[in-house]
Length: 347
Image 1 (cartoon, rainbow, N blue to C red):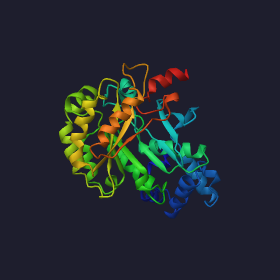
Image 2 (tube, one colour):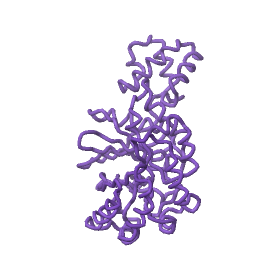
Image 3 (cartoon, one colour):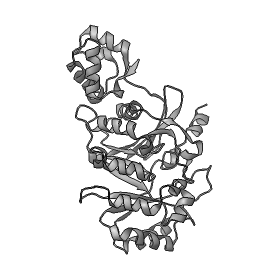
Image 4 (cartoon, rainbow, N blue to C red):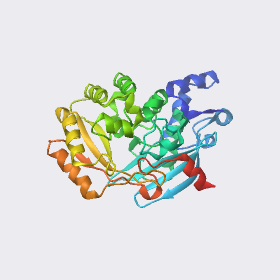
């Protein structure tokens, strides 16, 4: 049995024709799923009853099963079980005037950032396009307000799951799919240089928002926090980002997690500023105070230190913001998502 959400419209039209159904029926089904959030083929009343029976026999809509929902004042964390029994997290964030959905792209993560709880469990597998889309569909079905902002900042390294990510994004922004604006979809990466270059050459992927986890002012500190920097050196990463073909009115987001006594000192701010200042029109910087995790040894710096760091960067005329993560109380903030902790919690 296949999942409808694993197909593009053209693929589904061809599949329907192979089953003896008119191709245009695929357009009707897509409308039911992505616009009306319908998952029961029997309720798709503009399809002949015989067709509904065929679809019920051949396809499913949802590949994930919701097993838990943890509600906080600023967010909701959804816990889903995959078809093969693994757990993933999706976090709905309440912004001032909109909703943002933080999606996972992998079960676990192989990147190994020292300050990230997701890395503790390693990589289990990539999520399929249907599993990425299903996170959106199931959460959207649970809330009244339209979710217009999507960020791939949950479990996993999105660019390490490049082809599945690309297909999921295509369905997300297509008029027959979720019909999201490309400017409201963001990909957050640890800085895989080869994949960023591949992204730059792709007509779709180079038009969505790009966020890169920098987290250090120099190669030495970055390598100690993010081992992936050994094969993706900071200098080469910055060069790759400077060459990324963004329109002049858009900027790449550099994410910098501030960790007490590791990368939050005044001299770190000056080193970072000097690294970025020659390309200030290309970047904006998000300072993220570290989100504590009981399984990791790092601490969050005091807020006065965070704002002092910001002021130093601003003195170099850099565009810099402080982002206090939401979802901390439900372990749903950046760097806190971890599947094994979920499994223990749900026993």
